[in-house]
Image (tube, rainbow, N blue to C red; front, side):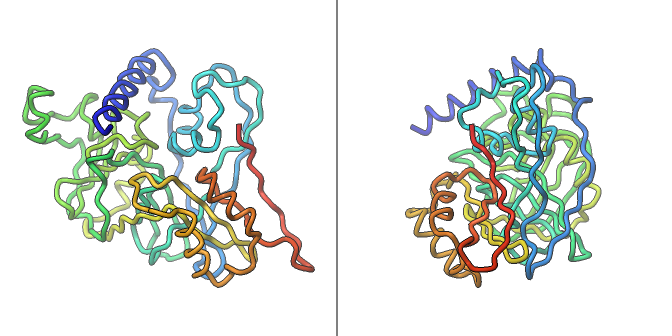
Amino acid sequence: MKVCRLLLTSILLATLCCIYSHNSFGDEDEFTAVLKRYPFRVTDLTVIGTPTPYKIGPKENLLDIARRFGLGFNEVDLLFPKMDAWILPTGKRITIPTFWVLPPSKHQQLVINVPELRIYFFEKSGSTVQTYPLGIGDEGWETPIGTFHINDKRANPVWYIPASLQEKYGMAQMPPGPENPLGEFVMKFSAGAYGIHGTHMPWGVGRLVSHGCIRCYPEHIRLLYPQIPIGTKLEIIYEPVKIGQKGNQLYVEAHPDVYQKIPDYLQYALDKLAQHPMGKSIDRKRFVNAIHLQNGVPTNVTDLSSEGTSLKMVELTQE
């Protein structure tokens, strides 16, 4: 089963490579990024960003749209499972899920949440956070979980190819350049040979594609790399269910169990809810539905039946 899955992944990436050599993703100048800092408060503001309304233009595809809004492919693919990623309905209005529940952590320095394929950089000020999508390790080469630190940084890195892959590439090391899978920058961390780096295959962001390393869009690693000094703490956690707060409103964000670590997903989610101070003041039907969908979108699960409650609910239509 694993061999078949890996073969299908290889075929998909080869197909994407062929497509994008003649498509918009081949024009890297189209994709730029501006540094965005989101305010947060541990006490009552752990949902950051806001949804973005968008009108699909001619000849657009979901991968381009995701990248343009700083999302991994998984984030739009989960929300719009019935949409053909390549043939989109021109003129259709959709909502881009550019908002997130913060991961449960100490909110210090770098945090990667594996099931959502996303990194968070909590700045020293203690009041703002940046976030970027990732590509992570595939089945059999899972990205490691634990607490580490950044122990090396390199611009224009040489890729020292693992012995198991040297025959495939015909070399022991690959110099910097457009074929180098590390991209322009790499930040190694204290878990062995693993690193956070750019990529020459941006369509792999939002997918399980690597041998354990963590891939960023080129435009995002350019923003992140200069901000991260050697010694920076890195937490890599595995949390498919996040519960956050925005004032007096409670949100849940559920992601697929990508590494199959949760035997009973619903019970796991209910246990997480029971630990939250506002866990009893929720609409259970909405909560269970969000857990069932696992679409990666923060869902307002606040109980609206409470007398005197006046809340604005955010609904994202799935296609």
